[in-house]
Length: 330
Figure 1: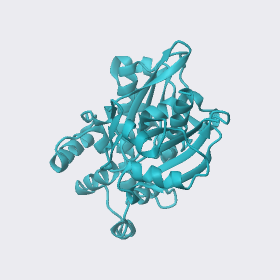
Figure 2 (figure 1 turned 180 degrees about the horizontal axis):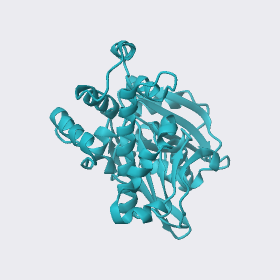
Figure 3 (figure 1 turned 135 degrees about the horizontal axis):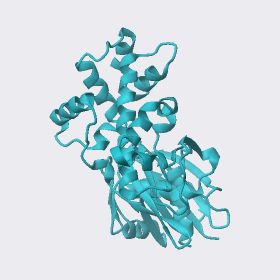
C-alpha cells in the first residue's frame, strides 16, 4: 500500500497527514499540526513528524509558501530553503514533490463540494473555463487552473507581489504612506494579515475616525492586532467605525485584485477566494464593497458580472490539494 505524506507548510504552522492510494485524499490519517518556528528547517520538521508515525511513508507532496523553481523553494515569510532531492535523500523517501501553496489550493478546487464553498456571486460558470484563485492570509497568494484533456491543471504565479494600484483617494494616501514605510508596495503589502495593522495606522493618522479608548487598551497589549481589528469591525453591538473602515479598504483592494486576476487569466470558470481571512469576514464580503471593486473594470464589467465568485470555507484546502496532487502521481 502506497503511503503518501502530504503537508501544508506555512510560516506559522505546518499541517501534516498521511494518505493511502486506497483511502484517497478525503481519508487523512495521523494528522498533526506543528509550529513552524520551532524547527530550524523543513527537513527537521518533517523528521520530527515522521518519527511519530507508525506507518512506512514512501513519498511526500508538500505545499510551501513561496515560489518553487526546479524543485527548490525558499519560503517567502520563513527563512527556510528546501530541495526535493535533498529532502528525499535525507528522509529516506522515494520522492518529494514541492508545490507552491496556492498551486496546492488550486489543485483542490475541482474536488470541493458545495459544503466547502460559499457563493458571493453565482455568475454563469463556463465548463472548462480557466479558474482563478486568490488567497489572503499570512501573505497574498494567487494561482490559476486551465483545462487539459479531461482535467484541470494548476499553475503558479507570484501575482500577489505585483505593484499595488489604488482606486480612490483613501487608497492613494495609503500607497504614499506604505511607500514611505516599506519602499515597494505590492498587493500583498495591503491585502493580507500584515496589511491590516498598516491600514489601521494610516486611517487613524489621517483622522478618518476616532480610536475608542477600549480599543486602544486592547491593542496595546496584543501580540497580534488582527483578530481584535476584525472583531471590532464586525461587532454589531459595539461597532468600531475605524475598524470597519479598515476592513472596507481591505475588501475593496481584494475585490479589485480579484478582478485583475480574473481578467488576466479570463476566469470564465470562476474566481475562488482562499486563505484564512475570507471565511472570517464573510458578512463584509457579502456587502457591495467587494463586488463593486471586482466589477470596477469599465467596459469589461459586464463580462466579470458573469464570473462566479466563491469563498473556500474548507481550512484544509492546501493540504488536500497536496494530497490530490501526490496521489495522482502514483
